[in-house]
Image (tube, rainbow, N blue to C red; front, side, top):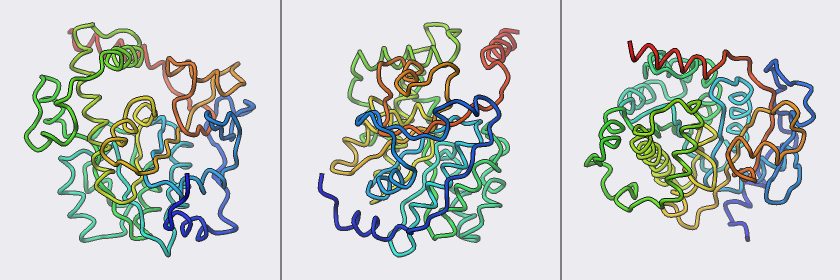
Length: 317
């Protein structure tokens, strides 16, 4: 593929001596041989951080997939966003899965009054009530964009819209925008059901899966739609939302035709799995469904399945 004039200009504008990526801090599997390495599944080759940053600069749509509670992933996202904010070039829109449409007015009001204030952004949108990890993890990502004059946007559906879609309704503002009127491919629907079930420790009742797939599909489409409204955009989202065999990249293919998309996932290494392809099992496929994968240590966390079981038991009570 030939690079556009804008892409060439972006590549030429990249600093020769850019800051090194931040060192990992997560405590588990830090000595794993894949930690800190970047793998391209298509070429089956490792590349450097600078080469990856150059590829991202040449893309129109960059998706940065995370594990939400891994601080290393957010530090690397902030580094990559900083590399994309080239002073002499148009800045990409920075969209967050973690911000939904209901927070849009508060976000706009805050940035209108304080255009570069990433510190106060979390409080302005009520982040501490959202259920996401602490704003301190995400603040450097927003700061990297705001300090260079880039726009920050909400990307996710509001809770009210999600509830309506779960029931099979399409809220009026989203009609004919997200492609939800077109029936979903049965194979893709079944794959998403299996993925959602696995992500919830195989504890969900089967009757809950169709509604959850509808919402997941709609959220992916809404994030893609947000990105497609800008000439260039960066998405901060969970790694499952940036896989290119489904999720946001699939919707971008129809909503942003002709745009160059780069899907990068930051993945925690798995004990005993020293080959990149072995990590595809997490995604129930024989290949890693991303354009690039950046391996990191694992964050320390409580048993998520046990916590989810307690949550379900509490709801029953």
